[in-house]
Length: 283
Ligand code: SAM
Image (cartoon, rainbow, N blue to C red; front, side):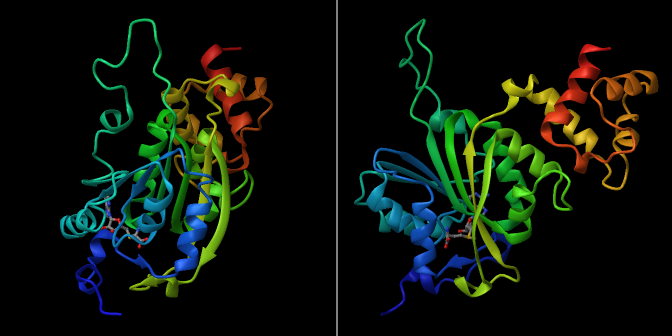
């Protein structure tokens, strides 16, 4: 079959352009989103449209955000006849998600709360900004129900890691604060063109924020996690004592049953939250 203009174009490595060429994997990624017949789906970095093509046939509404100007123009041409597909040329780290998913002016009557059907997110992510994209999605988690993303295998391992394992860190704790993380399957470099240097894994995050159950406020607890994991080789005590009085810290750790010599990597979210609450509420 002759190559389309999009397929002929040389990929831009600095935009993380490794296009999926394994059709069966595309189908599995879309299946991981569940039944999208009545759903809005946000696709991050549609590229040449490997996943977009499958979703355009299935989703009620598909919003695809692509930074590359040429690729987004080609996608617009390709999906121009699809009423349910909207291609946005833009940076997923900068587009106004409130404008895309939030209440439209004049649609909200006084006394009514805004509770739209939540969107699902999918993307074979540009790896150079995976963490930034995830943090942004978590920041706007109120708009999303499920996130299915292809990431570098090592990142998938970290996202899904259990406390106490060597992969557990700030990224794991943050992701697990917002939802249930499942590592679904792994693909070799040959599944992409051009092939990346690493293996890639598909991860599903089912959004279910733990903030209320843990009794913590979002911004403060995230800041606390950052401090706890601050320096990887340091103990929890050494990381926390940079900001807390030693006496207060000793009492809070004792109240929550946590030994000072422990590292943050060994603490699950519940114990981290217990220390946070003890520091916040006092002895
Ligand atoms: N989804 C396609 C596929 O699976 O074949 C392409 C995946 S490729 C790994 C990542 C895509 O994200 C590229 O098309 C790239 O141009 C796009 N991209 C890179 N940075 C972006 C950003 N900040 N916002 C939106 N798209 C971006």
